[in-house]
Amino acid sequence: MSEKHLQTGDALPPFSGKLRLFAMRFCPYAERSVLVLNAKKIEYDLVFINLDHKPEWIFDFNPKGSVPILEYEQGKAIFDSTIINVYLDEKYPDVKLQSSDPLRRAQDKMLVELFAGAQSAYYTAAFNPQGVEPKTVETYHKGLELLQKELQSRGTKFLHGDEPGFIDYTIWPFLERFEALKVLGKDEFVIDKTKYEVLANYMDAVRNSPAVKSYALAPDTHAKFTESRIKGDADYNMLDSSAVCCMRPRKKKE
Ligand SMILES: N[C@@H](CCC(=O)N[C@@H](CS)C(=O)NCC(=O)O)C(=O)O
Image (cartoon, rainbow, N blue to C red):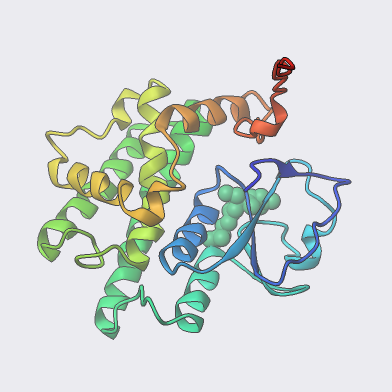
């Protein structure tokens, strides 16, 4: 997988026949779909997009130009993380990630809905720190408390059950980024391990689950990208090893 983000003027790579996900390496919504594809062990190609200088062809797949986008057949695509993930779960049912109980599915949706406040608070704290008000911090912690309470009342290792599922892959990408707020010096947003013991243990379990482990990034990495974005020069390709020139000394002839 190349970590290089394609930009305006770059050609659309040829379609290999596998599913293809258009994403951005630091996008939490795109991560939701990556995790579902990984958990289902579906083979797919991943193409990263520079969202500040989008390739022209991205609008052929999604008129809004946002990621994630799933190209399910050559030239045919669906977009939006929830739409993509529900589609994947129904189309590839071998590993089922949503509960079979309609009530539990409704409860999971409500949890995502209620957690959205904490997500917006995170965006304010990370990208618009001057906009942080006491209410922002309060909303953020309400979201964390809600998750912790839900974990306690469900009494399972993951929100989904003994294994992570749809609901965990939907919420995790934000928890992963919340941890970058500590690195960015936003002390009111730190997830205190004493206050949030159950949540912290849950986060460790999700972080170490196979679908997540292979894609999650460290808080420092998220913080570095966030800082570049705040400066107005988002460093999309900061993880692209091909961008670093690697001159190896030639082997001496024996
Ligand atoms: N509701 C969408 C949100 C996707 C979204 O906001 N993606 C961002 C990147 S994290 C994006 O593509 N922004 C660029 C743009 O909207 O032009 C989803 O769940 O997929």
